[in-house]
Image (cartoon, rainbow, N blue to C red; front, side, top):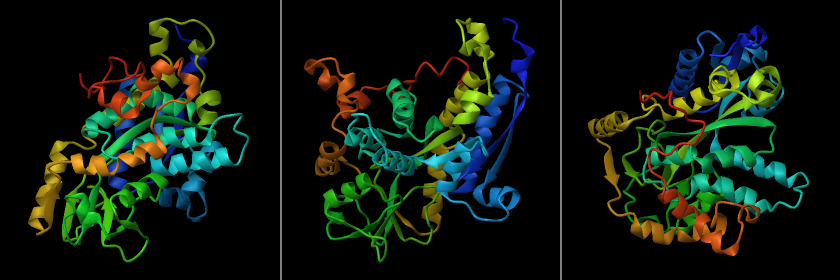
Length: 365
């Protein structure tokens, strides 16, 4: 490896706030990130991982913090890393665009790109969703669609596909007609999904609750694995930390492969991607364990044998929010528009797709 200037071998301590529930699940992601970073660059980064409540006690005089505070702390470089629910992050981006000059960009386009993650029945499974998040399309989403002055490191699908909990099974579109549904994250996309199925979205007195396996309330009597979308979180970094605090020689000139392997920023990104692919965070064995626990507690567990009727009923969601993935400025000619159809592009992805950031040093070896 080429000689690295000693000043670029500084050791760093990063504060990481876990802003989402359940904490033990997101702790596994953070610990996986820590493990892969230490494997790549032993001793270079010390992780102080804490919940929002722990941060409040230790650093904020006991005053509780919310998601808005997490973004503020990242912008101020008071913390360096945080996880953040993708639907809420997309909502914050939309608000940011609404409150500033968009320089000719179409606001609907900004919302549309981020809405792609929530589209109904888009991903075959969680592995397929992870492939999208680490593909060229996923990296473009992270890189180009952000005006919040934080650095999106990676997207992570977690806890399997979403569930519907209630007092009856919801295995066909007709089961939703006239029902009141409470959403896990109240976004325009998720609201439209259930309205297209004939349900009413409500915050109280709901018949059915959108949830996931790690967050499932075992007091519910019936659960349906609807698999209509994948839960997604984004790992965010402080922009100040990412661009100005950590410095690498290879940022400023042509560099060799060996020098790139010695770049802290690039290895942080790669370790982050590895953590999001880590099957020890959520895997088929954990899904089987969840199903077994439901059975042992007498909870009825139902699965959708044919998603075709659901896909047909929710097709209008694509027309309203994300018919194409890219803005028109990325499309060279009218003949290429069809190549950017979201469902076609994502369906063509193999479960092993990954971007150039995902090098050969992977957890699979």
